Length: 284
Image (tube, rainbow, N blue to C red; front, top):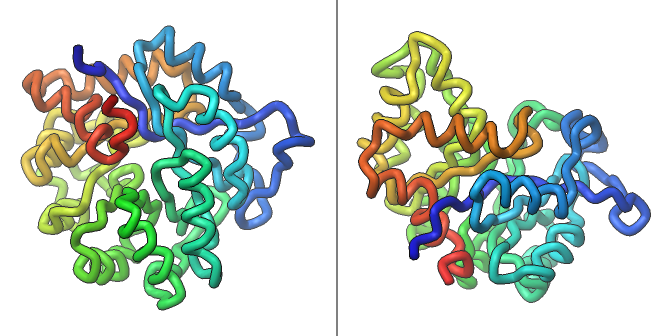
């Protein structure tokens, strides 16, 4: 039986602030993690209600900085159902050792957080030579690297894509392009052009679902073009729960509706198949 739905972008926030202290990257905690946190147990409950079979839990940099302990401890409880995506200081001399450490703790993916709600603008880390040893280590371990970035950093990313063509790179939130003009989405050309790199994968999240429902954009035309360019086998879904408002069930329902125009095979890839390619431990 195929796994029907895998989430590759949920976050979890512990209620135990002593064991897992708040220490956000950039020094400012994200509003969502402070106002509507969900711990591991709550996320599992939401999964069971929503029909989410497995998940790659993404460490919250805007809550814990580069301490991935809560995700690692949680994944260790149910290693057949979960993997974790960790973040480190990629510019530090011990980056390769830190990557190995978190992999040894049972985590299966790396994320580089170069921009976000508490760290606006675009950090130049992707073009820093100090990043390369860590990037190479991740590639040697066959880790997929998720990257949160803006359009401004695309040229930097392209340099890495060309230099390391066998390393899978996941683009968080599909780069959040401006699609307010509607089809053919000329302001999203920088996203679609990344389809020329066979090692690029898109993370379609609830943020993209919301954007695609704002007329004159539509889910069918925007996600349809993404599938046309990349293929469904290079697109995977992530809920962004609880950073995106609403229950996990509501986010799942909105997502499923947004891709309902696709054939069953394409839907399966986006719902589960691509996730299992990116995080092989979820394929068991």
